[in-house]
Image (cartoon, helix red, strand yellow):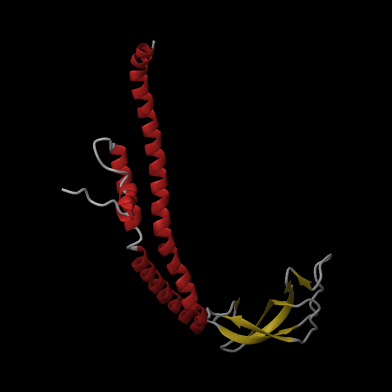
Length: 204
């Protein structure tokens, strides 16, 4: 009976499984199992990524809705001239205009007004009106979450399990290989210590 033809697929399979036969060690079999786990880790990564992105999108939509219902945009009027930039700096630093704090008064969504510090460009004149965001209590806050950016943010979160699961599995496999190599070296040293005296006596 003719021997099976040696093909590139067969050679690749033998390399992946670290060969076969009576010389295959238990550590080799453990390493093959580790390789299989690494390969299989790519299967759940896409569904986990989709689930993570979907859950993140839902959470962000909820946050955006809550912030949109709680935050309002109003005008704040400066009641003093804004100071200049900090000593030794200019109005433009690190690729963006710097801001300073100045006292201002802004109206509340339900009537009345509040006074406090708002961020404005240096040397902004008294009486200047600036747009600010406040919550339902009139406290200064940031703009509500932009819904347009939710898909990209959710996709970025979905990438984490897509890359993280295989990467974490590969890292564990690398640690396993280091441990198996150390075990093999110890076994080789023990076996050599057992046969070395007999080997040297035959040479002499």
